Length: 141
Image (cartoon, rainbow, N blue to C red):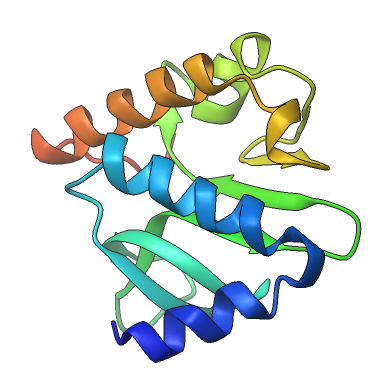
């Protein structure tokens, strides 16, 4: 991934740029096996981490999808963690440890990085990284 492209991603975050840069740093430090990549997907341009094979029943050709992705929205930052864990999504598993966040099944939303409990985030990231390194299938229930 070129630095220019990632810098553009961070700059486009506007007033959330410093929080998005700091979140990127936390992800890289605690999930170093998940290599960063800029992806265009259903959420627009996102910073993805750790591409893994992905195929739905409707896909004719398998593709790849990031294990983690983040995006700065108008009113919040989204961290997408499309990882299965113990019969549910990992965001649901760690929600009680993540602080002042709004969680969907695989999306963690927060207004500013200070709302996110860093200890819980680090624990979740290290869990994902360990499982990725072990070659576990992370998608699908």
